Length: 377
Image (cartoon, rainbow, N blue to C red; front, side, top):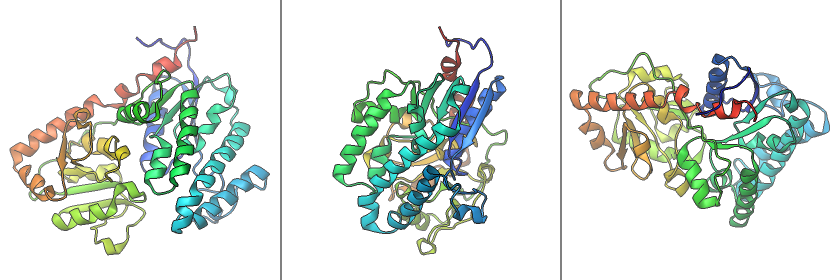
């Protein structure tokens, strides 16, 4: 049993709130802790280098400060956009240097402005800012790592083989040195042990969770399929999403940024998770690299929370941890949906999905935080 705190704790959460998956878990942790009487500050570093993060504001184009570290971070951010986003050579050969510079600068800036010793616990939710946890502090610290960073960047085509080996060696040491370490999903923790060689001695695993919806989806004919989430990363495999859309016409896409019209997606813009009440299936697409085979998609829990059976690529592993998942291949996609188009069969699958969501309620998955917040011995 986790020790109970002897008093309310002061907790700092460092995160980048992007309006998509990167916002979900830090906000859930904030809510969970506040409901238990703790004093929680959440710092959004998404526009740390900029004067403002407000959509459409001029401040998003301007540096946030003329102080050397902040100005250098701004210059590094501009260099990243110019050299590593669209230029193929720069993306593969220069991203490593931009990322490491970003990591060092963020550590320096955040360590100077956050006052870590004023808190009992500091939690970091993003690899970009995780260097702040290497700053000496009296606070307990937890790095809630989304997934193994070096391998993700490599799979995105942003590292040479030599840089990947160097990046992974650095990340392995960094992860091993953290006081407490978690990943977004337990399969990533297994991956880090098996592929990185982590000991796991500092693991305090916080699985992703959800808040089961009070209004579940209902059956409709023809069944409609929703894709909800970010459309910006290569691992999503937008070409696969486009091919599936051609195989099944009742597939609607929500999220951002807006995809290339040439893909032919039935794109409906940005929407909150409540839109899922009007659908019968949730869809996940991903690339076939080992990290994604072993990995996890945050949208999976959004779908389950609304009672949607989740269509998942057949190459993704560990689906036994997420009941309500329905494997597909590109060739079988339409037939898999057709097989679950019978109302009674769909309702059984929906009930299984919703029950899985109840088992993954945030109030359960975040229980290990009690150990972190417990009284010191």
